[in-house]
Image 1 (spheres, rainbow, N blue to C red):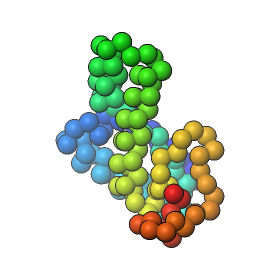
Image 2: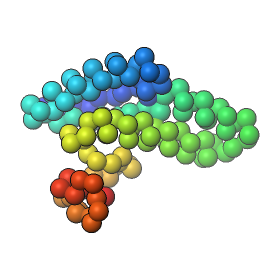
Image 3: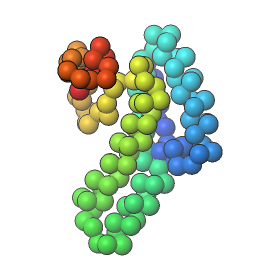
Image 4: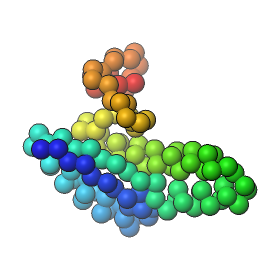
Length: 117
């Protein structure tokens, strides 16, 4: 089966929530090991909104504010990728079509067998 799961970025906003995130990721690992395909979408959370608000105070454009939100969302996604390690696609996808089918082996890569650098 295929699943799409949306993780609120707020789950990464506090240490208290990280235990809950660990439980969720363990369930995802169990589900993925049963040959299910899982797509995770991770939000930016409270920090993203706080940084966007700070940018507004300094009159940043909406385009710049969007870039800030996207950057923080990608940071959250990197944490989830790291937590899932070998079960996750090894980098944050940028837009549709961002997946590569075959890994490229890059000299010096920490995990060249599964690297998509």
